[in-house]
Length: 328
Ligand code: MF3
Ligand code: CO
Ligand code: CO
View 1 (cartoon, rainbow, N blue to C red):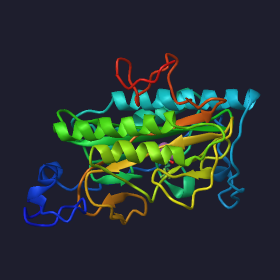
View 2 (view 1 turned 180 degrees about the vertical axis):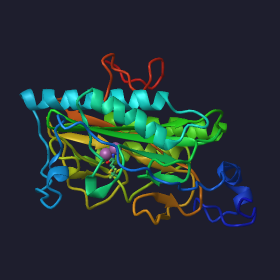
View 3 (view 1 turned 45 degrees about the horizontal axis):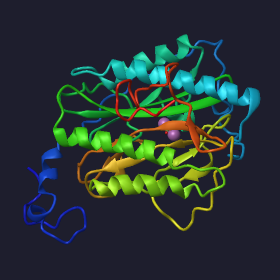
């Protein structure tokens, strides 16, 4: 059962739900059951590990990653690999497929490319990707729950190869999804690409938040403020923190060569969420679905270039033929 028609609307308008966003109640699906997690998958010994897997006790300062020359070439490669792993994994999504089976597909895709799954052993995270279904906001752990017709799932891939991390995610529908969920997914993709397109060297990183929040607000969604993007390169989560909502605390400026992620989460319901007993899975309290996309980009002399793309410039974030595919 959805919320009462006379309840105040989740969007904070002060109006009754029936006079405001009643249709959104349709989006609530049976609560995602968190399932059993299989033991960690092995990575061949020849594949280089990130520092935290080798020595979990030493965490160097998360310095901003400003890359050029051969370091930027290695970064391009890691990001290409991440885009390839994401594309292969998303292609395996289907009704009845468990998220652990998606983890297996991703794991194989990383290791065949000589890459280490950055999340495996990161602060003791046990899996090679994150899979966040419906009202799971982020950091869902792949488990034995089969995907159901009408679910939406975010697959988040991070590859460590040639000493660099590349980070990218996409949300896709399972089987036939409600049209409202397709709009949520498309809007979240639009917000992500608009945030990236608004980056300018020498200007505040807040330009990302300005574009993301404006796309989300136009279509009636909230933007999650507790999670943001991050600098990335030799370090998985580096400075600066990339806000997706407007805040006076953000002093970061875009400089050419800076590598970072843009990864907004848009929600259809209220902001509150709670961490599940597994210590990772963030679940929205009202059970309303959310979506997320993520690209790793590098600031250029004129804007930002998306690095997490396939050889043809497309990706699972902006598939070929999509009207949202970035030019060039
Ligand atoms: N890939 C996520 C990000 O976009 C981070 C996942 S960390 C994990 O930053 F430990 F939860 F896997
Ligand atoms: Co990220
Ligand atoms: Co990610």
